[in-house]
Length: 115
Length: 114
Image (tube, rainbow over all chains, first blue to last red; front, side, top):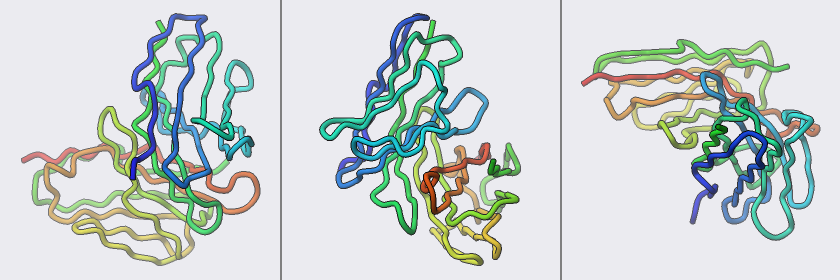
């Protein structure tokens, strides 16, 4: 059973470009979470999605950031007009359920570097 | 805003020693998870504790959830160099739109010297 997959693993963008990060959840998981890990900081929640729905985007910056989880295909985290402060590791996690436990399984992350 | 305070932030010990990492909050969590993260990789789930007072063991690792579900601890017996890594605690809550959202502690970097 394949784990959570993220691609690319490393992404370099110049200031002003767009970054697209992809996440394929574990088989059977319909809940996807995105987290950001800034240098010297812990993991911070960004957004929680189910298929075709954004459930909680309280941790996502209001501008330039967007996320989707379409009916078919991976979840996408999109950052428009990237700035140096966006350089971080972005992790996706998936979960099979919303009641009881909330065990989340993380992907290997995408390391975004903005030059 | 819920916060999880993790201590110590750094821990450097010799192989064979015991250690405890603490995770404290003023808020109640419905469950608490412990992860281990290697450099360049994502966090790997070690255990989930749900019930106040719960104790779970994973080989040489013992996890405890406080009675009030506000704190947790991770105890490692006879640490080995392979235990080296970043240990993270994360709390989750049920209900509302925040269900499942994890609040992470800042992590404990453990180094075990041979």
